[in-house]
Image (cartoon, rainbow, N blue to C red):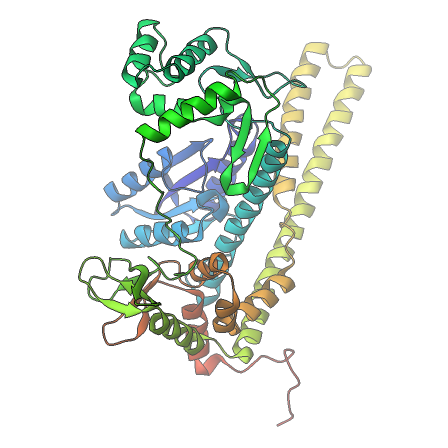
Length: 500
């Protein structure tokens, strides 16, 4: 069987360190161990796994489609290299499965058994959690900087980035004059068309190529940064900037008065409405692929919430659909004895993995020690005059490379620290209390729980019931385990065994 290897790093800085070579070496070593021929290697240099719109990922999927009769497996270093979004992970995995191709991780125990598939779901969710935590920390840092009046994004036209220790932005030596002239001209009564013509006549173009358009001119004239103000409404931040204003507050205000008389601003449509957590998550049972929209209707003094299919018109009240979803969760919740058995299985697999890692570390430590002993012998030969300096340096450099490679292997042989007991306890609590957790969660957390429980959503049937979309979920894997009645008896050691 042939395999395809996919490696990825998130930043350009990581491209220049040893992460990509290590990923590739581990994946190719895993393929050799499994007896698979590597048909192709795709290396993603500096693209985030938060989206599936990645250059090498698209090329890899195209290669798999073209060679589906030959390729049987895609190998990644770990699941976080493949995707950091649970929904995207399951969608990509389903796409590969449709081609008859399986996904394997070189460092994680995933397979097509119920335990392996559940571990895959857990690892995928942990990757998304890690990504969400990093994003939250990044947002916290950005908010802290914005609270101090520092601009943390790309400077607008007319400014450029400031240096370390100084203001976050400084006036651009050429563009600032053009922007100031545009503000003063419009505040003085010029039309937008005339202001735009003046900018074009002066030869100033937008940062991304091409002359300014009326739309980009609107954005410029309504940007409070030019008046020295940092305003981020979604975070409630309004601060004086740490940079020099390009126009006076009076000029900016006169421009806004004229803009309000000439511009009709559209209110952005909220995709995730807090009143309708199942919006787009539940699909129409008639259309299958169409997610339900939602909204409020008013009858006299009372409001009624509805979910509706925009294609066929299928309609259900908010109360009925959400009550059906809660009932659906309650039916799927596994019994606690199955969760305890499942936890014992996972712990056993994890301990075996740790045992293999300890054995590998011992072997690699011996290899590093042997290489260092060689270096010591080389130094002795040089000191005794039995080796000239050129040969010594050549052999020393070769052994140092071997030591560096062995030390990297040693580092990779360490099983990542994971409080598995805590993870399994959380999984048991979440899965056995899914309905109650969903009912009492905020709208944002409801959507997160939905994505973890049912990565591909659920379907609302016209007869008034909810069913799974047919894709795998954590509930499915546990039901498969619990359904095997012949394997439900715990082995000796899990609980006291009565004498025959």
